[in-house]
Image (tube, rainbow, N blue to C red; front, side):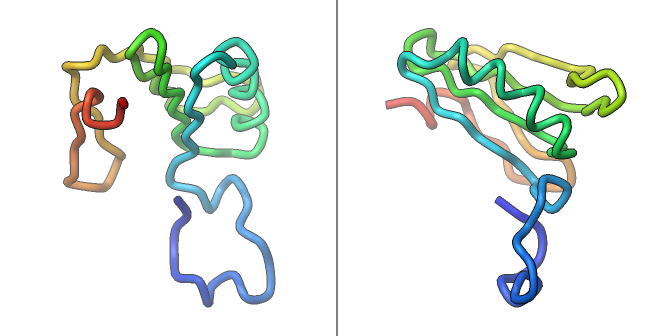
Length: 99
């Protein structure tokens, strides 16, 4: 999910700083997907979610610290928890994203 409108990217591809959110959905690739958080921090992605199908959890990574190469906040939410994005009024229950 990126900020703006499609025409904002006619002359260039969106970059990490243009993203509102990056989501990884993991059935068996949790370790590999957690390691990608470092790449998303370097790309200045403000929010990274890892939806862990097997564990029925959502890891919410926020507050990227580019110098340290990590997110300052990582919260593991259960299936009954709610999650939202900064600046949006919409919230979701984690279980609504799970199969």
